[in-house]
Image (cartoon, rainbow over all chains, first blue to last red; front, side, top):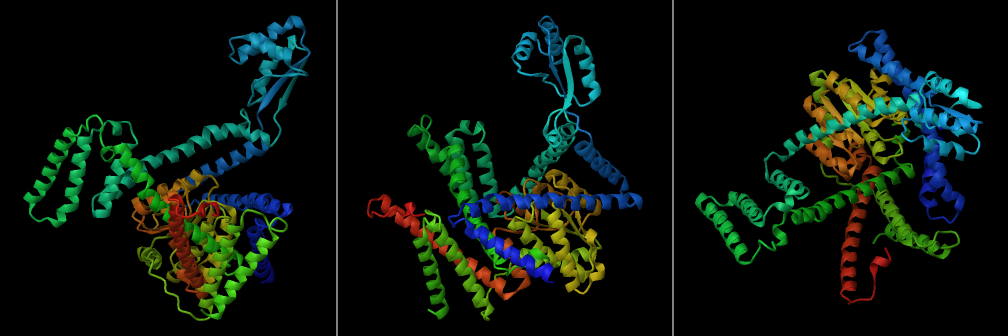
Length: 343
Length: 283
């Protein structure tokens, strides 16, 4: 109990208080701990913990394959993907590159030509300038996934250069280096798969919007109207909608709000129709064709909705969330909420 | 005014005074208001925790989303289907994840009680370990440790969309009757919630991620909005000290509202040239 509850709790309280008050204490090392060390410690612990997750994932998928549970075929893909990522990260680097040195002046043009052809450069003179400008040895600006591919180029260059070496980018850095197997896997497999999932969002937004915008009550109608104005106001066509169209929309909106309170349909029609006529006549007299009022401009209404009612709502939510986070953090720091230690 | 209020007020003034005296030497200069705000918030919350501990009744309004937790687990049991709990894609350094795990404890108690199967796919290994401890404890508390298995909490991937794809796969294959999304979410929120909606699951969501709240409101049956989500553990546990902290939080909110109104008025008067006191220079 002491090791599982009391000591972790003391660490939580100690580090919590230090992090909270560290911001106010005029001490460089405390502030450095709060800003850098503490977060780095967390990153290190989290990095080690990944093994737990990876082993758990592997264990469950292997059990599924061995026991031939339902849909076990997908687990083969998961295990194969895992093995491939481990192979690309820890065992096969790729990212090979060639360096050349000790080139005779007469051979420089030939070497530049071969390299330019390999790099699909039209002007070998640029390569020649770079070779002449290099201090020690010149690194050819191309990374090879396999040594075999690199050796093909080396065979072409060997007769014309004094020193030629095949090197690889260092371990660790290779995962972010173009030309490594891991980088290839990331760009050609993980990124497109992630993008595919992200793209699904467009369809889900459409179906969710359809449900949200269905006119069921006053709030849903308000949401629909605000949504339409925002959508129109954010595209170029919103600027082209004339004031009289907006005024008709405004009158229809007023009619929709007034409808439940006016039982006589003819009166309602008269109000809406009369309002539209008054709007159009007074607009024409006041020259709204040249200078339409801001109230009848979709982009301006859109800006107003975004800057005031929407912003006010989101700020209120934000304050609530921030206070919730503060109260929860406070409960954890003073050791009142121990759930983080397991129940 | 009771003695405790006076005592805490005096403590607040002493600590603030010490800070002002030590400014530049022991304490950092120029963040006096920030320090006072943190002190005031902490003392207010602690004061109400103390009051709740000494037996004061705290009223909490009904939160439909939290009330529906048990109903959702019961529904899953009746249908003979599983319960899916998604604690978000962030690590344990996020308060939302901790809050989500708190609620997981209560959901696990219900699944243990009703003998429903629980599935908790996670995206971070540390969250996996914490969630396992929490579930184990809940099953033990409900008197059904035999129903608990480590594999009910399992790791999928750290990668955002790989995780979303994994959870979607589980939903499509297992068709859980109840889905809970309680934690920190990003763009995957709507992907998960819409898939849950398409399989007809009862869905309860809660998050502190501002941008994701509208998506959850649209696609889920119940959504814990804003601070509702953070009150969940107090609401469900009914522990007086936790309920006290919620009351303290509400009083702080009241103080924030009063400060905002006062700031607007004072700034308005300053802008109009009626007073020479610029409140914004102090904040």
